Length: 336
Image (cartoon, rainbow, N blue to C red):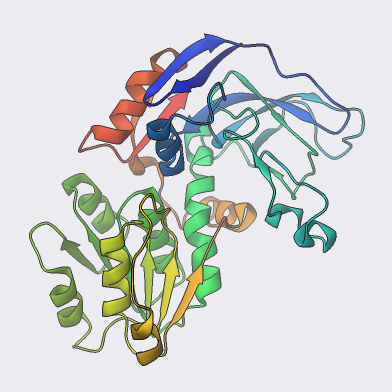
């Protein structure tokens, strides 16, 4: 099969790789669409782990089913999470293998979905494999994974209808967070970002206030938009030391800061402000595929406009460079 394989720092290519082997508890999926995630870019720039097939935001059709898998059928349209839990850590022993602290992840430690075919270990319907109807396109379904990250952070934040929320960072996860917040009718959603295309999509996604972080003073603009009080919740989706500092400074006393973005640069900060303001900082990882899928099926999400570029696997290098450098790139996706 053809697959996008990481060879080193900013070096990825389409190669012919062995088809995944069917095991008793696995399924094989013919991949139809697979997005490039921000975490993929971190790995791409770093160049490790080498020789891995990347990709974890995908949709496809089941083409093979292991002998011990009884609830998934050939021909079904699915999204899935490929991972191998260790079976020994606290989470694994307490019925939460999806929270395994030693997990091997598809697209990082085990082969991912930037390929014609991908394998899902320990496949279980509604656990790590989820059906979707033909009313949803392959591309829309492949957006479930990143949008579910925003959904998961909102579930942990537990916003109230009267809350004011700020989303820092208007990438796909930030834009998905905006859409979910509006779907559950949070009072006001403010977004801060710095690329024109993404700011336009923030408006399309329903943001009530959009701040251009290049042209405006973000803290001053948020203060004005919240009548000087500050937001109840900040979703920090950008993952930089500067935006982390902004989130702590802008949130109201007693508020919450959701740490959603992945940080490439370590933070150096004084936690005293979190004590002075009685803040709650919450890290968030992953989300809920079925709940996000239900929102999409109900017409409460509009993810297709977030897909700005599509490439075949043969243009893996161009696709990654586009996602990393193009000013108008939001979600770059491989389609097969």
